[in-house]
Length: 138
Image 1 (tube, helix red, strand yellow):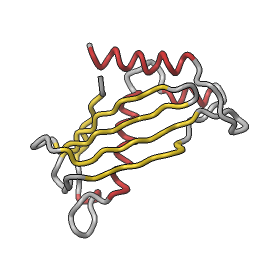
Image 2 (cartoon, helix red, strand yellow):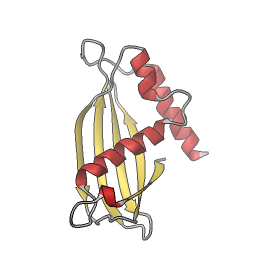
Image 3 (cartoon, rainbow, N blue to C red):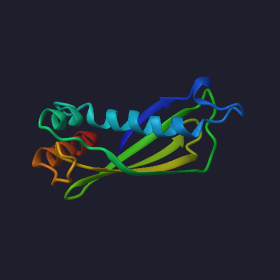
Image 4 (cartoon, helix red, strand yellow):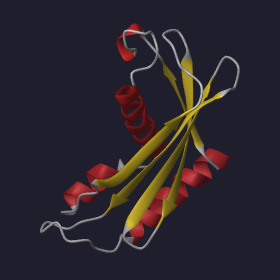
């Protein structure tokens, strides 16, 4: 079940035309991803860093369908798919006021070791996602 994060859109998030400035949406994906992992005992990125790993983004994309403006609230649903060496986060953004889909996004992360070589995800990462998924459904 996707995890929901609500993010208010302010004037500082918009361009000269009053629409959300597209890089801000990618920032909101990071906000939603951090919110996804916050309820789990230790934040995933902190766990990985302590163990000598990093989880950089290797691919990201977004498509926009309905504009968001200052005063809107973006409702972001985050879902995580775990691969052998990767996490794929998908984001669905709707405008809270009317439920219209505003955007969709995707980010692929690959776990790398201290030499920046891809490495299999540890079981703790899978448990972290499972814990988050079970807390979202309860």
